[in-house]
Amino acid sequence: MTLIARGVLVLALVAGGFGPLTHSAHAQDMLEDAIVELARSYQALPDITYFTAGGVDLKLDLYLPRNSSGANKTLVYYHGGGWTGGRKERSVLNLLPYLQMGWTVVNVEYRLAGQALAPAAVEDTRCALRWVYRNAEEYGFDTDRIILAGGSAGGHLALIVGMLTKEAGLDHVCPGNRDYVWYSGSSSSEELKVAAIINWYGITDVEDLIGFSGASGPFADAWLGSSLDRVETARRVSPINYVRADLPPIFTVHGDQDAIVPYSHAVRLHKALDEAGVPNQFITVEGGGHGGFSVDQMKGFYREIRTFLREHGIEE
Image (cartoon, rainbow, N blue to C red; front, top):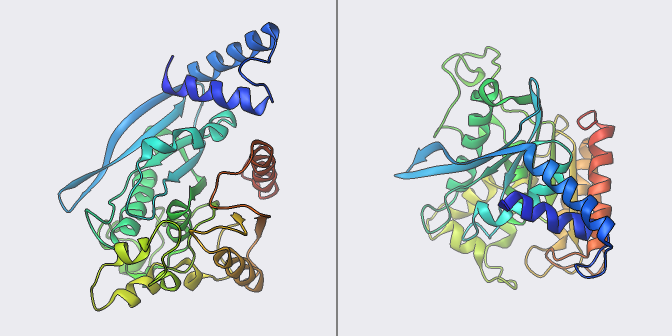
């Protein structure tokens, strides 16, 4: 059984409320049929190099629906790990709800602090989004229905990638075409816009975490390093500093007892988005920590996400 099939099996059993020893033989048959159908309906293309930076080949994995005709709605996912750890492969199970909804999925790796300090991870993940745009025709990405998602540091990257402005100057590593708006003032199909952002307890103010040592230690300091401009860099990569009226809809989930990313980050973002008139939804998980939410809670969150995307014309 493939990794996708094994993951779908776990998700299906959990989502159906069945323990591995309690469901009936009939239910097991139905689940296995659904799992085989879903697993056979996708192909995985692993470790595609989307850019090379600092001598590092940056990779992404594609999960493409076999039966899709034309452009398909596309999720770009960024893993967490405090910008200092984590791997894209560890996020595969987080992708399964989107595969069930028929999304094309792009699972992105980026340079960690041990390879390059801030703002490298932001530059890389912007490059990955540009790669999606430039390869939309080949792989069937619908550039009008791209959503970004991630948890923790991945939530931060989803936010900052979807909220950055040209004035931030973080696209010089892989800029747009020569006739792009930044160079000539003309319009371009390569302008990096997304349809929505799904933020799972992501960092919204990196400057606020300078000197902060939560349950995972001083990860922001490790990412920023000791350069004299570390505070300015922290400001440049903080989503809270890019809130404005023309942002895409943003969906946020955050536990109010999170000991790694302060809950106040989500509260402040929600308030700023409301004041700017940006469509957004904020779910507070009462008593919730840094992820690790219950099965019932996760079921509810994904129902809310699907409704949110439908309301904004992104999901069927």
